[in-house]
Amino acid sequence: MIGLLVRRNLLFILMSLEVMVNAAGLAFVVAGASHGQADGQVMFIFILAVAAAEVAVGLALVLLLYHRYRTLDVDMASQLRG
Image (cartoon, rainbow, N blue to C red; front, side, top):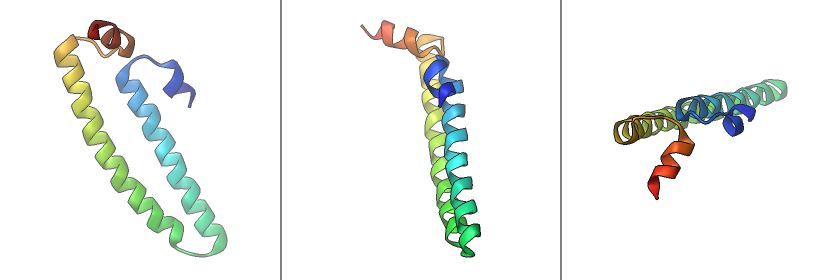
């Protein structure tokens, strides 16, 4: 959470978000294992699919931002917007 709030580089923000999504998936797996059911593993597969889509969209945004503003700094991009 700190990496998401403190960092200003878009790439590091997306990596921090990815770590948080994987931690939530791990919590589902642990909860399912403690109850002896496979529901947590099924939820983790859905989380992996959503994370893969998030990475694809996030990298497209990173490339667009860098191509347009020549920086990955989120604050600089918002200042250039006007």
